[in-house]
Length: 275
Image (cartoon, rainbow, N blue to C red; front, side):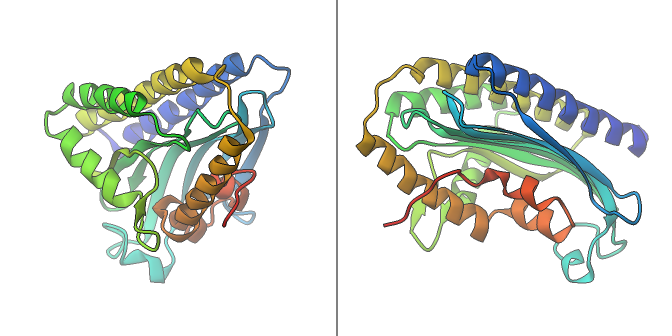
């Protein structure tokens, strides 16, 4: 399959998923609120792609949710080339993806994160995953979340869940705190075994996230909470912010490749606290 067709298939899917997930969020919110949409270009001087990020704030259910789509191309800066597969031979790249972060009003509903991407240099690969960060522990929710993820992974390869869960646990970890960011999920990168199979898996990851966030939110949106619960949520969000600013690959990649700063930092919570 020609690389241009692969790029179109991937970026079209990410855009379609952005629209579908935004529609679901508005249905859950049942409010007159709408997303604030911002389109951006990577360069003002030449055509190097861009994207659209959508933010919804201060809803009854969603305190802040961002849904970001991007399709960018150009050349990696010299100091960045050695860190990207295939970029040391040729600095030109093409990248498209979708990323979503949900921060909820109700502390019983966890923060949720999802992203998938397709990156092309002289090599081509998929990356992404999803994870959940609760403020209040819920062992039943954790067990069900991982059960659904395992079933999804097993549809494609019996080794995926164990491998990508381990990768997620190791990745979403704050070394300076010696603690995990949340209850994990799956995380994968540099996935280039077979385009058709890999793309099928990436689409399933997106659809599974869509199903999971609908299920998790609808189960808990009417659950009562206290100011003490909310304060604990703010502290947990502080940990979330620390990870995204200190360790997150997507944040670093976006900033180093000239992405839109507001779109990249949409993952940060609206209010966070530290003790």
